[in-house]
Amino acid sequence: MSKARRFLRLALASFLLFLLSCSARQERNTLVLIIESSPSNLDPRVGLDAQSQRIDQLIFDALLTHDDHLNVAPGLAEHWEVPDPLTYVFHLRRGVKFHDGRPLTAKDVKWTFDSLLQGKIRSTKSAAYRFVDRIDATDEATVVFHLKEPFATLLWNLSEGAIGIVPEGSGAEMTKRPIGSGPFRFVSAELDKEVVLERNDDYWGAKPRLARVRMAVVPDTTTRALELRKGSADIAINALTSDMVLTLQHDPALQVLRAPGTVLAYMGFNLRDPILRDVRVRQALAYAIDRRPLIEYLWRGFARPAASILPPQSWAYSNDVPPYDYSPEKARRILDAAGYPAVNGVRFHLTMKTSTEESSRLMAAVFQQQLREVGIALDIRTFEFATFFADVTRGEFQIYSLRWIGGNEDPDIFEYVFHSAKFPPNGANRGYFANPRVDALIDQARKEPDQRVRQQIYAELQRIIGEELPYLNLWYFDNVLVASRRVRNLRLSPSGSYDFLKTAELAP
Image: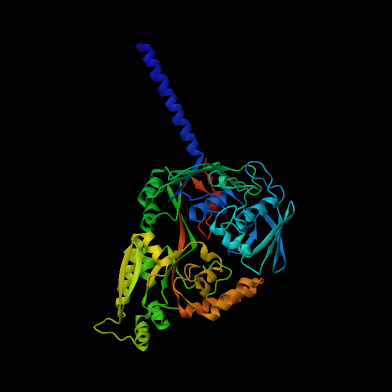
């Protein structure tokens, strides 16, 4: 019995060593990416949150992609024509296959959008295609979109991040078992734990060099930093505080990559408020706020001052907007002229709503101090994020601050945010800004097929909005990626997507 027990122990120990060895080999061949939360829905027709969209871009292909200036570029569609403002003809690549081996044809493209337009799939994304009248698959490689009215933004809404092509007949099962044609295949997902992808060896384009990617869900920021230091994770992007990044960049086992991003922080004003409806007050606020110490000390230099809602990478960006360089003296003169003299050092009170997130509270405290210097008493009201955001979306605020993540990469954001038809709940014109000239320019730009003409229209829009200040644009955040040095060939995209996984490789 003693010999048998020793044999069993030895056999069990050998088996455990074998499992550990296999696990170690698997981990060495697997890149571990830290993500903050699980994706809400991996059906590209449905998922709206950042994690869903970024992971979907790896699993699914779209008709179009983007270049570095946020222009649309060929994707599944090799080229396209616009014979008239109501007709878009797309010519598909041949030989593309879904992950289950089925060929991708025009019927799949038609189904993807018909399932939204005909309500077969319930999704808020269907609103983006409300101007589509019908879609024809004229042959296996040709898709024709017929519009109800001219809609120049259609191309953006057919591009990566907005949508991905699913197989014909796909229904709600796509949520749990997504099948695309992208560079990575879906393997598994466990809520609040991980998402696992593997390389698509049959991909039509440049094949990834990574065999497998495990996206580990780590909600806590400090834990994310510790996972990187321990070597149990390989990459985190835009998921650490600035101070953590500065600390980790001294670790010889880690590397830090940084590039200009498109995420915008802004301050929003309620123009129905009796004080804030005066454009002079908003301009005085712009002169009274000094972004420099916030960028330097709060964000530790990982941000750049913003002058437009559009990022500088955009083809539609214009730098011909009124500057508001920090000048408390000018702010005081404007407020005096507007009829707000200081009484016992205070001209009036304003209330800023913010979330309980630490950086938001610190930012509001700095604004409070800066505005005090020009005689404005800023009261801060802090709420749990869901409550705070609900108030903002209903227009129940005087001042608030939020970020645009991805939505400002398409200039059609002007319609969603500044058109008078988009007051809540119809859109995100939460400050109730109304300007007939702005409405007319937005409508014109959405119907204009010539991009050069659209660029001129958007330049005028940015100038007017810069003068009237329904928003005060604060800064654009840099994309900051921290990675193990065993990871090579990393390339950051302006949007902060997970596209770097398409070129990354692990050192042998």
